[in-house]
Length: 128
Image (cartoon, rainbow, N blue to C red; front, side, top):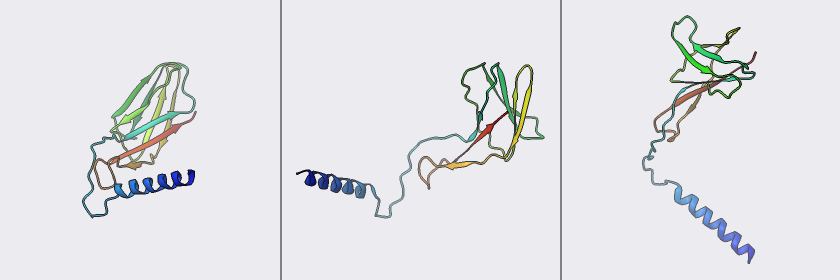
């Protein structure tokens, strides 16, 4: 009896898989999932005092800024900011740590390969 149940489940799974395939050549239907492009900064040793994280393109005056409290988790994300190269500064009352990076972007299309939007995201890890 158990073999018949397992075979039945396998056939049901195969039928469900084939039913989800579009073999007719019709155009893909896109969903409406959104996404944001940007840079995420991860600190391997966050300061134990309040700090500020600034990201900017070297040579430009515009800066992206995030304020972080002492000892707490801080989500450091700069949405809409996708430079070819970036400088990251970790600023406390006593010190400034600067790191330059070339972001490696991962491209995603949450609605499918032929659907918009296309988002580009990079994670930059900063160590002391």
